[in-house]
Structure formats: C-alpha cells, structure tokens
Image (tube, rainbow, N blue to C red):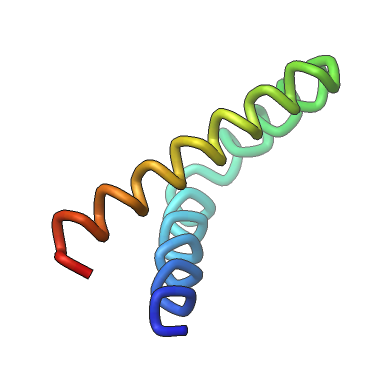
Length: 65
C-alpha cells in the first residue's frame, strides 16, 4: 500500500510541476495529442505503460524492495 501512495504522490508532483511551470505549453501538447489518430495514442499509452513498469521494477531492484 505504501508503494501505491508513493507512486501516486510522485505522479502528482510531476503533473503539478508541469502545470506550474508551463501551463500554456501543456495546452499545446494536449491539442497536438488530440489530433493524433487513436491507434497512435494507444501505442503511446502502451509504450508509457511499459516504460513505467520497467522503471518501477528497476527502482524496486535498486532499492532492494
């Protein structure tokens, strides 16, 4: 449970940082993302998911958890 809370906290920190530092740029990125075909967005989502799982696995291994 502690890992889940940590993960959600880290996501919120990153999202908050993006919104705080470059809110107008985020609007541009969202607009460009919406113009991509659904299959491309799905591929990006799957790649992000795979990268996230890999990073969690590496982090757990390096921390010995």
